[in-house]
Image (tube, rainbow over all chains, first blue to last red; front, side, top):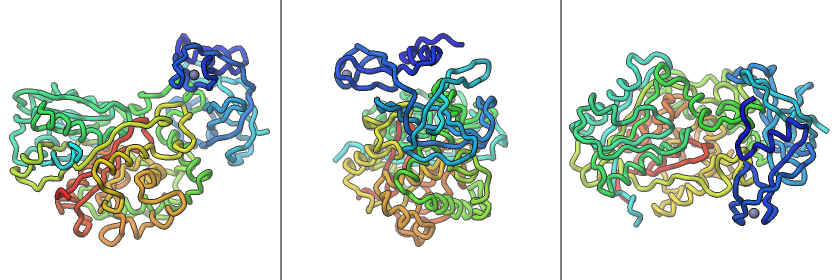
Length: 132
Length: 388
Ligand SMILES: [Zn+2]
């Protein structure tokens, strides 16, 4: 895997350890995503990485049928979602299990587990969400 | 009055367009032809051009064009940040800024795209902001990025999906009647549209623009100078470029209200405030539609309709020239005129205002160029054939 050194490094390291870690401002308490080095609201540079449950709701989705480059490891069609994580409101990109090809519903409750997505020669840690 | 209002103009236009992979020349050669055509259109010596502006990661650095054009002195070369078509209208504002500040006198706005030279546009756009969060979710293409937003607009905000079909049909209707369009002679087969293969839901094949090879160039000069050149000026009345708080490259964490939009709310607000115009003053819209839903969202953002009444406004009959009240994409738009990263929409804006369009809008005086929707940074501009 590539070196993880961006502002979101604790997120990726957390997933590798099976945990969802998300950043919160130590000054005003706002959740900050994308990960940043400074809170634009209060100016604090104290970023507190906090564990959250992999539980949330569906914010939006698409089901991909066309074979785009970089998706070769995924069976077609596959569903990608934007998930709103409970108890913080951060939205994450992820994938949704789609065994019965039932269209997702916005607001639907979902739970996640850590899987991986093979892209070229890398396995990127990925939250795979399921309904219920 | 705002300094941009009616103080510069497009004085010449040139375009070369081919099917993807069919360009007879490499990218720089096609671009040089388009620039020479724009200068000939205005009857201005191409060696006199002293400035260049582009957008969307164009690879033709202006200094390299100098030998072929015979450029005497390069005084301005700049590009609007942003990987998508969001910068297209902003490029005209940048050219105007150069002219009004005395840093250049004759500026070419251009975009060139020849796949054999610079690869697929979709790949170039995505390279701009592709990251592991997106790769892990299988989100790797503009169609998917826009599809997720579109579903939110359709499902959460209640926009009926039927409006997309009307929008696409209107583009094809005009393109079928424009000899310069790739779809010339081909009205959209509605059954074929509905049954086309899925790309990324809610988009089927014909909800997506498809790339062409080619280049287009626009010669901009001061309004005063434009009046002395060969063709009637297309005056720039206003231009806004940027993003507001809560919109941008935010890993889908845009403000919930802005999320399903095309990103133009602040752009439209500024554009209308700085020109003193309103949607009711716009006679014709050249609407950058990378994907059908984003075209609809752009019309909503620019104040032509709302989530509630969109189906009353975005109707095929209402969108076509000469009879519709809101004629859009009178050259065929990105769907049917051709897609050289959207530059054809600006080309048609000038043709329409000159009365040279194949689908003339009766007495059209004011044209909105609504730039690439859904990009992190977006822009729009208003042109007119007289200064109101
Ligand atoms: Zn803070």
